[in-house]
Image 1 (cartoon, rainbow, N blue to C red):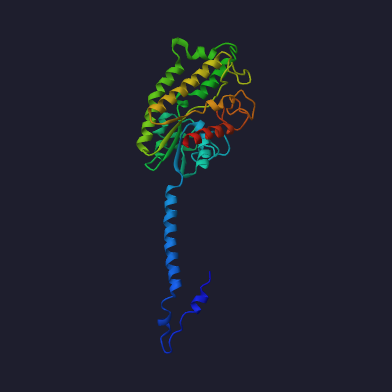
Image 2: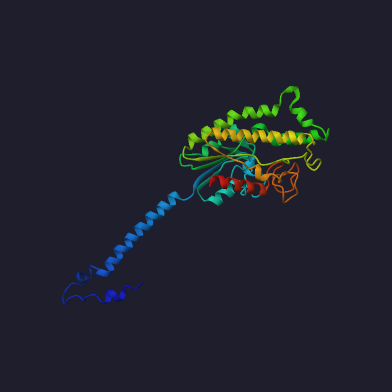
Length: 314
């Protein structure tokens, strides 16, 4: 918009009058426009500030290697030894829901102890994961418990035992020798640890919604596996499947008791276990065929987990 014609049509100064006296005030129409423009600018600034303050969640992702997305390209964050992926489910969730701030402090090998204690990894130390929380945090996701049991290493150990008795139950025999199921005992021992972590999260982030993430379907949900493609003895597949079911059931119970939302990533992953062909499976076997850690989700698995988390986060 041009204002020159309006200025030119204003009254001329009287003869002998000081030129500044006649031009000190702009014409009435221009004065009204300037007042309106100033008021509009102030309103826009205030609205922009309010929108900025309320835009997106302040999201913190905590957890172990299933959260970190170990060995899925590309490596992101520090320390490098945590093996966080730029395409793990926290990163995908953050991009999908829109965040005011986002911190992924997950780390491969993390146990419930590493939520409150520093974790030493190659090339550095991951600080206590709880330290990433604050009163301003509005969303927390946490996937934890598997390393307290050592589930991935258990599967690998069971694979080595399978060669001695591929049609039997060498793994179950090993972990139940003496009349006590060692893995069930480990799950029971993890219950108070998970409960304590959830309590600590609520204390540090009292305004946050907390999502406790379950573990996806690792072994086939029925049948006896795919030995020797993934060398777990036929009789041990139902046993290990039961162990994972017990772990997820424990997590769901602790979420209900600890004012958290349990996110079931198992149900949708049925049929995408590590016995399936590449492109169908979301879990890699002992020898991965897609970039991922052994007995861990691949990129498709992390994407599927992200969709479940997004749905739970609303």
